[in-house]
Each structure stands twice: as C-alpha cells, then as structure tokens.
Image (cartoon, rainbow, N blue to C red; front, side, top):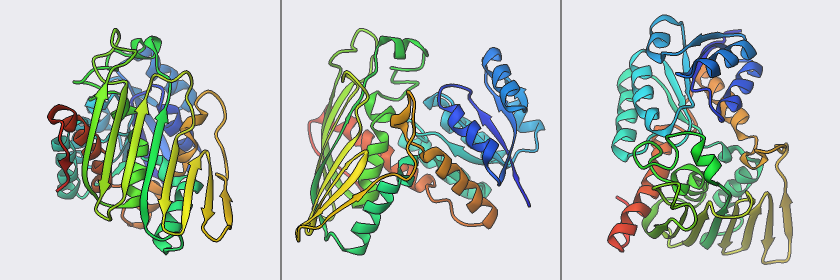
Length: 337
C-alpha cells in the first residue's frame, strides 16, 4: 500500500499533534523533522526515529518528501509553504495559514500554479459536535440561523509570552487572541452559518500590556449575508482555559455548544451529542481534531480528491480577524467583498 513521505518543520508545542498522528497514520511515513533549535530537533529526531535538519531549505532539496507540515511561528507559514510547493511538496500548515491576506492569496496562487495541495489546520471542524451542527443547518431541520453568540475565554500569562520571542508581536505573531486562540471559533462561525456581509469590532489589551504589543481581548458584531447577527467575544485574561461556547438561535431550535452539544427544538425535543473521543491532559481544550484532519488530508491526497480545508477555506478566518483589526481603527463596519 502506497504511503506518502512526510516531514515536519518546527518542533515546538504544536508539533507533537502532527508527529504522533503521523506515526500512526496508515497513509504516511515520517522521514524528517526540522527546527533551527538543534536541541529540539535532535530530541524529536530521536523520539520519532527520523532524520533531523536545522535548515528547511536543505531538507526540501535533498529529501524525497511528498508532504511538508508547517508548525513554525506564524510569520514563517507563508514563505515556507510557498517555497515547499515550488519545490514540489504538498503542504499542511498550522493556522493561521498566513498573517496577511496578501500572503494567503499568494499561497493559494502558488498551489494552483504548482498543482501542489495546500491544507490548513482548522481541526475543530472535525469534532463530532461541529459536524452535527453543520448537518442540522444544511438539512434544514433547525431552520435558518437567526442569530447567535460565541465566546472564547482562555488564559495566557507572562510566562506563555516569554517562552517564545515571536509571541505577542504584530510582525511575527500577526496579532493576539484573535489570530492565535480565537481563530478556530471564527472559522467555525463562518463554516456553520455561511458568507459574511460585514463586521464591526474592537480590540484592547487589558491585562498583558506590559508583556505584549498585541490585543488580549476582542469583541465583534458579525452580520451574515443570510441576515443572521452573531455577537463574538474573546479574551486571554480569564483565570483558566474555559470551554469555547457557541449558541445559535435558529427558526426551529436553539443550538448550544460547550464541550458537548445540546439542541433544544421548539417542539420540546432535546438532542444531546458528545464528541466520540475526548482529549485529556493539560491541552485537553485543544481537542482531538488534529488526528482526524491529518488522516483525512493524506487519504484525500492518495485518492486524488480535493482537500477539505484548502487555501480558499483557510483564508476566510484571516479575512475575519483582519476585518476586526481594521474596524477597530476606523470605528466603522468593514464589508466583505
């Protein structure tokens, strides 16, 4: 059975989600890891029994690689992805796919020009609960979405931002809570509800202003083209990493997601859905979607199918947080084209 050779660039905190999955993926063969930190890459190389590189350009040049996973700081996603695709490698990048709309568009264009596939890690779309909400809305069972609210109340402190020099900066992280923590919820909202008409929002730095130059708190009013209005709030100033909450008011039901899913229909029926497998440990709030997404990515590559979350899907969340950043400056609604 054919397997695709994989390499992971970046051996930081998110990389184990990719590396562990690749070890158990029937369609992938992990052959290399890369990081500029010699100690990190050597440790990963020994643990996962693969080659180690400190220069990704050399790795792309000499290895027989089919897929490159990008787990680097945000500002490096676009240049590495573009170079990898031009070198004939398919790419699966962590979110955000880029820190600017222009870079994201270039990635999409290069993917088309090179015929290399570009995938983006929005793994929460693979949660059992997310899939069920999508099914209910598309089937018409709950009727149209009238409105909703979403909140991300997590905890990040000085230690977190001091652990890597790129965090908390505009030029390297690209923003704060919106681009890093709440981006998954922004992606889910547009994936579930549909195209956006316009957004108005604000950002602020409430508690972490001594440590970061980006926002730790944000809010927005999101108007969708189907006339739904969604209120959005995100902060890194909470005491713990609380479960993300999404409530959607529909014509025939109210959908509540907070870890588990509860759908309360107008006729009195109540439906409850749990994620089939739940993550445990310190990063449990990340969920288990990475494994499902990565396995799906490889299966679709081998079958010649379109990637589920490609560049065109990945850029939508960038447009959303960029609109909030712009609105914060103009104090006006920012329209989506």
